Structures are given as structure tokens and as C-alpha cells.
Length: 154
Image (cartoon, rainbow, N blue to C red; front, side):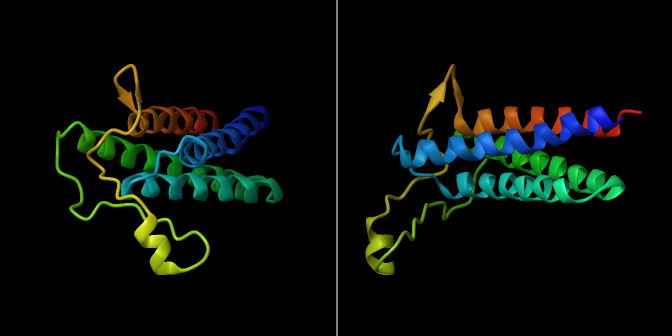
């Protein structure tokens, strides 16, 4: 049991960190500004990462509970990714006011005016016909599934 919990813990530290790091790399290195739903997908990754990090300092059932919450956060971002991919494919409608805001540093108004508007129903990047939102859904779902299996398996 202890070994499976360690593997789940490692999965929930590395997985969300890698996906969040990838999102920031696409934005800051690749120049692909995120839409509103892209930002929504980042929050559960951050929550999972914080919960898994806190679990480093908590023993026993407290650690297990934090890891379960982290895995559930990854399921949430997978769900948002599915919704976002569906909006991109026009399977359903997304939020009407879907645009990115990058406050950055300096003057607020200048920063807002300089930020490109990115629509959630436009695919900015894809590989093999799967968008970043689709990959987020797949990878987050795998991370959550593996972690939950490792945590809950008796």
C-alpha cells in the first residue's frame, strides 16, 4: 500500500506540474495566448499541485485524503478540457464572453488593450487532430485515473 501511495503521490506532483509548465511554455515561449477556458483549466492543475505538495508534510490518512482531493482536481480539469474541446469542435456552445486577459506589470489599461482577444472556439494548436484542450482532457484524465487506482486499490 505504501508503495502505491508513493507512486500516486509522484504522479500527482509531476503530472500537473508538467501540464501547467507546458501551458505556460506554449504561452510565454510559443506565443499562444490562452483563452478564458484555457485559464479555467489551469486552476485545477494548480490546486492539485498544491494539495499534492501539502501531502508531503502530512502523515497517514491525511496524506491519502489530500492525494484523493488532488486526483479529483485533475478530474475537474479533464472535464473542463472535454468541454473546451467540444466548444472548439462546435459540438456545443461555449461562454459568449470568452477572451484572455494578461494583466502583466505596469499600467492596467495599457496591458488590457495590448492583450490579444482569443476566442475559445478557435483551435490555436493541434497535433494529430487533437487540440491542446483535448490533450489536457486526455492527459489529466489519465493522471487522475492512475492516481485514483493507486490510492483506492486494496
